[in-house]
Every structure is written in C-alpha cells, then in structure tokens.
Amino acid sequence: MKTILRSEGLCRDFKIGDGSVVHALRDINIEIEKGKLTVLRGRSGSGKTTLINILGALDKPTKGKVIFGEKNIAKLSEGSRDKLRRYDMAFVFQSVALMSGMTAFENVEFGLRLAKYPYDERAARTRECLAAVGLDKRMSHRPGEMSGGEQQRVAIARAIAHKPNIIFADEPTAELDTATALHIVKLFKELVARQQMTIIMTTHDPSMMDVADKVYTLEDGEIVE
Image (cartoon, rainbow, N blue to C red):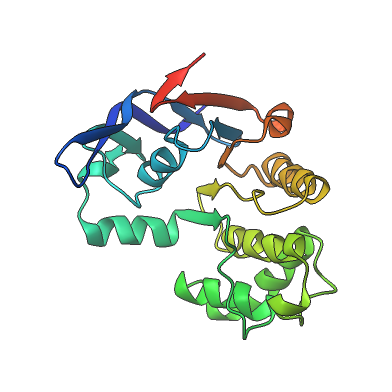
C-alpha cells in the first residue's frame, strides 16, 4: 500500500514553569497508508493529541521529520503550512466548531469558500457531502436544532467537502454516547471504503479498535506494542 504520511524520529518537548522539560513525544516512527483508517490510541496524557497536531501541521516537533508529499512539513514556513492545511488536509475536533448562526448547508459551503472550491460547483458538492453523512433532510437546520451526533456529521461533511488528501479527527466521539460514537466511526469507515479517504483518528475508547485498519498505541509519549 502507498504511504501518504510518515514520521521519523519524532520528538516533542515542552518547558514548564519551573524550567524543567516534559518529553511529550519520544522517537515516534509511524506510517499512514493511503485510503485507510488509522487510530492513535492512548489514555489522556499519552501524547496522541500532540502527535496528531504535529502530523497535521498544527504544531512543530522539537526533533524529527514529518514527510507528506515527499516534503518534510516540519521545516515548512508558516505560510506554506497554512496552505497545506487549507487545501490538502481537513480536521474534525471533539468540539465540532460549527457556526451557530449558519445552517448545516451554509457551514459546509463556507468551508468550500475558504478552500476556494470552484464557485459553480459549491452548492452541488455541499448537498452531495451532507447526503453522504445522512443529513440530506437536515440541510436547513442550524446546529442548535440538531443532536450532538448530527452536529458531528455536519463537521465531517465540511471536512470531506474540498476533497482533502487526509483527514485528522481528534477524539471526535468523546462527547457522544456509545451508540452515536459507533455510528460516527462506522461513517468514517464507509468514507474510507467508498471514497478512499485517508483518516487518522485519536481515541481512548477500546470499542473503536475493531473498525480500524491500523492501530498505534501510545503510552507516555512512546509507541508501544
């Protein structure tokens, strides 16, 4: 399988108030396969959010490489990293971060505008993505009129709309009940199977492991078996 993203010797240190150093990540070497659902598993404080932020060009490592498209994105300028996130990547967070005054349709279409998606294709693409996540009949509803699971599905529709090369989902099911969480992960799996999406998801929930194509477990900033 083709590797779309990989890390080499990745380390991330943080200095705290007393001048001591916390080693959040230590010598992380992973490979993300294209068209697969990869899960980063670990308890709170294990380093999984720090890792996904670095892989997604939201943060820089203290040492090591992140190779995406044959480029070490850890060495790119802020402008280049911003462009990379806008066009080649997408993010789904624990807090869905939808615009409360916008409908589901407007939230997704707004994301396409930011990505400079062709104007005459935006409406059709928005409807297509909302239908793909099962919200074709809820397009005119605002977030406050939707359940937590529905809001997360709008966030997923917004993430996939501009056809990114890779999607990062940081604890996307943490605030959902078990049944809704499993539905969201099943949706991720369907997007991988039907649209060959590449998704990296963090979670501490062991019930999510069975649907993943690949699982990396983190403990104290290190990958363990």
